[in-house]
Structure formats: C-alpha cells, structure tokens
Length: 145
Image (cartoon, rainbow, N blue to C red):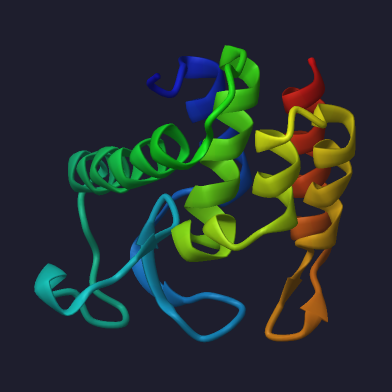
C-alpha cells in the first residue's frame, strides 16, 4: 500500500513545515516537514531549504514508513489504518513500531485494542507533549474510521 492524500495531510498537519533547520523538542536537528537531518543532507542549524527540497525529503522519508508498515503488518488493513500507521512510524520510527504492543495487537487482529495503544506514545524526552497527545488522538481516530 501507499499513503493516501488523507494520510499525507495528517503528517503535514501534525509536523508543520519549517524551511529553516531547527532543533526539535528533544534537540534533534530537523527541517522541512519533520525531516531529521542526516550528515549526508549537508544541512546545519539555521540553514534554509526550498519548499521543493522539503517535499522531496518528505517523499523519501515516507518511503521508509510505508515499507515498514507494509513489511511488518501481516493482516489486511484499510487505507485509513495504513495512513495512521504511516504517520505513527514517521513520527516514532520503524524500530519503535517493530517492537511495539501496537504492532502485536494489529497482527493479532485486535484492532480496537491496538487503537488504544496510540495514546501511550505521547512523550518525547520523558515528557508528555500536548502536540503528541493531539497527534496520537488523530492517529487513533483515523485508524478506527
């Protein structure tokens, strides 16, 4: 499966887009639509990128999230479920999804119970962040719709 426009909208709304490189709430260098800067990106704190470069980074980052969901989920998903999981993986990372109770419950076909797992992922740097609370609720809502 591939992320839909609806899923892409959720990511863009949750992440926002900043064309100037900044430090995220846990001090990771970030630019564009939530792209974690890699050494190979050749971007430093305060550097500015174009909207086109931001879109390119997002498309490349989303390929990894899509691959993760496609490879790890062993049951049939709706498009909305897939989109919500891509948003989750984009934000939390493939490894966290791979070892999560969320994934185990999905693969067991326990979708309602799985949906309750989103809310447990509301911290960054050990602190509950209001933005993550809101994002997890949006993911849960999309997953169940």
